[in-house]
Length: 120
Image 1 (tube, rainbow, N blue to C red):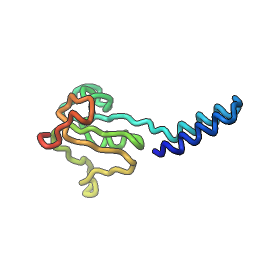
Image 2 (image 1 turned 45 degrees about the vertical axis):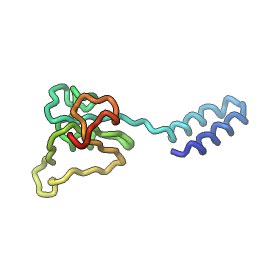
Image 3 (image 1 turned 180 degrees about the vertical axis):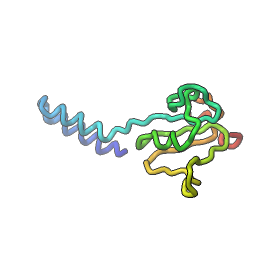
Image 4 (image 1 turned 90 degrees about the vertical axis):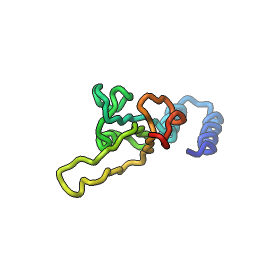
């Protein structure tokens, strides 16, 4: 994200001082501000398996990838995850969106700095 562009846009907006420019400015600004979410994956999760928390984490990594949006972070708890599928070409995970995937979690962390990717 280029904060210089955002600053320049905001400074230009302030010059106009007319309300009719406010709505387009907010619409334009929202395209530059990413909305990211953490999606959780844990082998032994038992909740509703929607990836919204460690308790409700996906147990299938591919489902987490498929359910992600561009810019999301996928947090994966310790374990071994295998691709599932009926064909030989399903022997890998397919990531087609720009997401960040992080491992090294035990399954109760609330920030990236808490993970231990050496032990987990």
